[in-house]
Length: 76
Figure 1 (cartoon, one colour):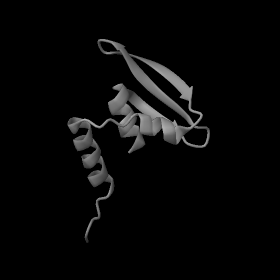
Figure 2 (cartoon, rainbow, N blue to C red; figure 1 turned 45 degrees about the vertical axis):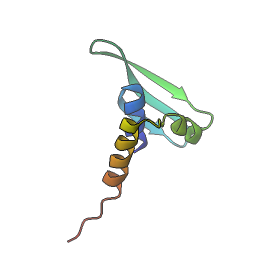
Figure 3 (tube, one colour; figure 1 turned 135 degrees about the vertical axis):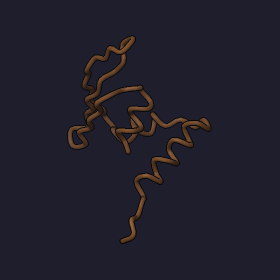
Figure 4 (spheres, rainbow, N blue to C red; figure 1 turned 60 degrees about the vertical axis):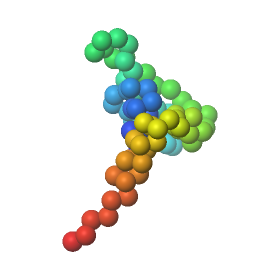
């Protein structure tokens, strides 16, 4: 879920989060279909992830769908 939020916020690809070292590897768009790979460390990963959340209607709908996706219970 965190990866999806970062992908949406930064329009990034290939997001990998290292929770232990509080770092994020991702590819950011730099124009056209070109991306550049970066890694950055967060002093407070939870705070950073919260800062990526937006309160507009489109974003809230996206988050709602994410929550539904990750809370799906399958019945056998």
